[in-house]
Image: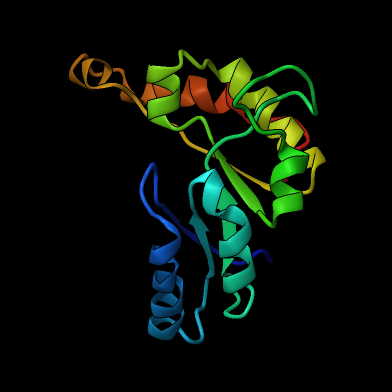
Length: 154
């Protein structure tokens, strides 16, 4: 049976000097009963993975591109994230869906790329405030779940 996962997302926060927080997380949870995942900005993945490996924490990324390579300036392929030391990637976060107009088909393609690269794909689901106020939360989340999760996901 797969262990439960507790994930934290640093979003667009953190610098190299902040990686000592990984030591504090590990000290606070020396024998966790769940897998711990900390998703850091792309600039911190490699040093965070090196440091976290000493503590049994998994370092994740906050997004990936669906293509394995190409002229996608500023984007990062899932294999590049794995090569840098990431073990997972968050996809479909509400900010990405809203700020970058990412739809569930895009999230699904990114999840497929992440899984092909050996990463855990953490797919986020959620409604906007307007959708919540309209009472359509469960419909929105259900549609996102159906369209975002690859058929090959376990």
